Length: 533
Image (cartoon, rainbow, N blue to C red; front, side, top):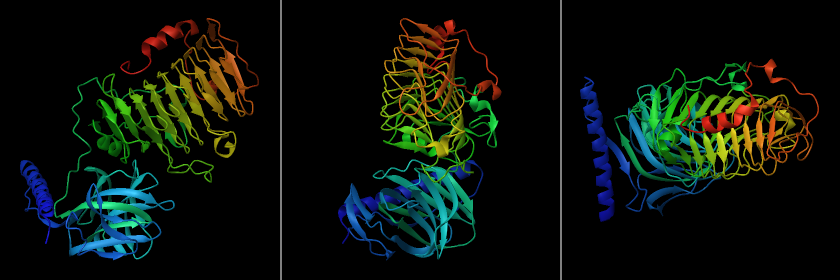
């Protein structure tokens, strides 16, 4: 006999499905579109303590307590699948999914639709590569139909929904569409769950014959002028290179407003151009959250941003890749955001990501770097940011032995930033050339200002250094670098630059105007950080 709690939970699921169906039907009526009544085709919340009706293949499946009763696949050494239901044509399969552990690269946990068997089906999975994967299996290995970048954190619950209507497949994470594809391999089948060499908990499985929303996170409600998604960078982000003409971010795409972690994470990982307006401080899960290409992420007003985690702009680290891959993340703008309390980097740019503009942000109180650029990334501009209350500020090149990825790359411009009592890495540079550091304001950087090492070539000009004992050096630590220091102001007992060697001139790549260094302190203090665009 089912428990009283089970009956209540199943009634709640049924009510939820009915509410979704009613809302969808009402929306269709308002749009002048006829709609048949939606039906709940299948549901299981496992509160009865069993998984009767589920057919399994591989893995170790059991009903456990994970907040509430859930269906756990605990093995990570098998290709595990479970399917249920009578089999339907058009269907939307939804479940709460909590990844627990992955065994190896390219693994995923997933919901299944139109399953012919435990080896033939469509799937929507959360991958340990930091992606959402929409794919299919036709008796062999998984085949990818579409992907989108996404933050995937083991131990965190996500709601996945895979819709199969006609030949159209759509994948949703936390009620936001992130992937889609067209395929005709399977016209009907059962619902299912999968752990592809991965462990996970699954709960609240629901199958209906009505799809969900098609819109991005929310309809924009941003008052004019409070979320600036336009602008053109100066420096390396403006250069035409690597198949990308300048840095335009989400230009040409829609604009959405987000104010929750799930909305933000889904939006930044969505494929295609998108302008994302962040309203308020959003607490995100710990760790790094992946940003896909062609995105502008901008704060509304002066006090919007991210706390608790950071943004990763780049593919997963891989030492075997030594030249820019065709799917390198590119064309990303991050502006007017407050970053606090990151558990790793606040912003990390890696794996040959290119054409990135980090502008007018306020970054402090992180864990590792505030803005790190590494592993072959290039054509980056970091401008008009206020960095403070932090030690390891900005790293360019992560290791003295990473020459295979970094030599000839790491071309970055730093201008009009306020390095406000940040002891070191302002920036610390390896291998990059030319690295252009101009018109920044440095104050009381107790370890070092600009450190240029490992044969990097830095041009440091037009900056204002105040109370900085070692403002510029080519011999900070490890192998030496090269630097040219010119037209800088060294005020209030600042030391002298320690520079030598020739460096490529940044002016051979782009045009720029150097401000009078005596005016830089006032200009940067007045114009850097959030609320200043």
